[in-house]
Image 1 (cartoon, rainbow, N blue to C red):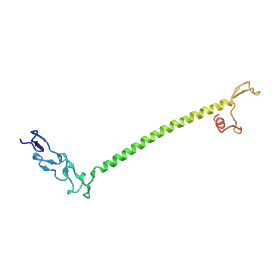
Image 2: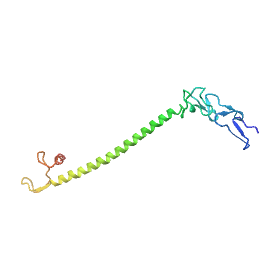
Image 3: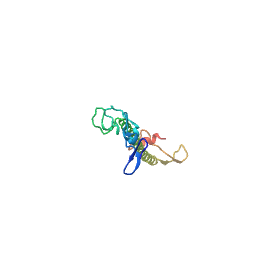
Image 4: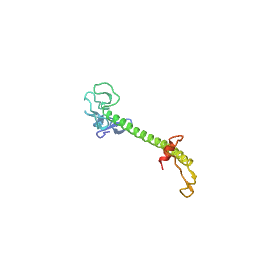
Length: 159
């Protein structure tokens, strides 16, 4: 049986199949020409012709001819992915910390507001003042008045 170019006749199954990576032509008999390699010779080697494999490209050797586990084409992608992941991780950490701080400080503000409100209520009194008509009024702590803590001073400054 005759197969078209870039097809291989598989005798056991009696069919034509695609060429294995690194080969092309009639019955897939020709290896890819430099710098092409891989499936249908569509990938391109960026290393020396003597170390470029027509099947796997530069992935088996580095530029010095030593064995390597990654091709030089993958290094920019690995760096980019690492940087991208690091930036995303930093943004997520920033938002988590911001939300936690906001919750913590809002709780502190609510607690302090409750305390200041109770201090103001504690120092409110009803008196009869001869210069004015009798009735309740609120008395705030003065700046020179001795108090238990500086919170009373804060209550005075909020008038």
